[in-house]
Length: 263
Image (cartoon, rainbow, N blue to C red; front, side, top):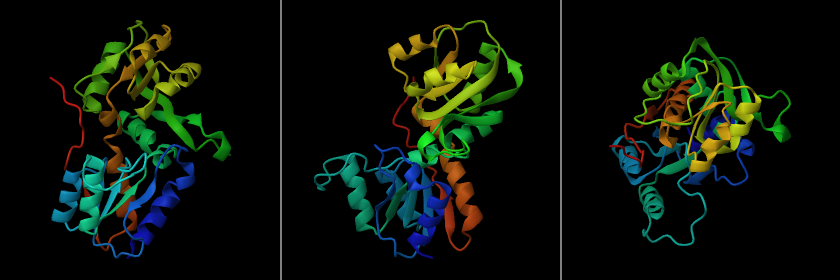
C-alpha cells in the first residue's frame, strides 16, 4: 500500500479544494510512492510526534495542523518547524495535513464536537457557498441539546465533556441553553453567524478581548481553548482510517501537543 492510496482516501473524505485559500494542506513532506508501514494520527506534527512515529514504526503522520504553514526560506534547524521537517526527512517519514479541508466537511472537526456534546438536528453554521449545493460543506455546526440547561449547568457540562481546565465566557444572561453553535479552532469570525441563527451559546476559541462585546446580550460566548476545541479530531481521523485500511497499524498519538498550560 502506497502513501498515495492513503492520501487519495483522505481527499475523498475531505477534498483539498475545500480548504481555505490561506491554508497549506496535503502531503507536506514525503513521497507519494513510498510503501506505508504504519500511520500515526495527531493534532500537530512536532519533534516528539516524529519520535513517536519512529518508535512505533509509522512512516506516515496524518496531522490536522500543517507543520509548514507560511513557507520555508531555509532549512537549517533554527526553528521548531525546520527541526520537525529535517527529522522527518532524515527518518523517511511523510507528513500529511488536513486542516481546513477537514473543517469544511459536515462530519469533520465541528461535527465531531457536536457529536461529543450530543447535539441533535445539526446543520452547517456557515455554508461554503462557492462549493455548496446542499449546504453540507462549510465551517462550524449548529444543533440542539437533548434537554435545556441553565447557563451554569451548561458551562460545567462543557468543561467536563470537552476536558478543558478553563472557559472564558461572556456575561451570563439568565437564559436557558438549548440551541448551540460550535466551531473548532479560531472562531471569532463566526460570532455574528451564531447570533443570526438564534444560538443560545457559541463554543469556539481564540476570542480576543473585544470579541466578547459582540455577544450584545444575545448569546453566551464560550472560549474553551484552541487545543481543547480540536482535541477529538485525531480520534475522528483514526475512525475514518481504520474503516478503510486493515493491513497496517493506524495509531492514535499518545502525545499531547497543547502548548498552553494553566495554573
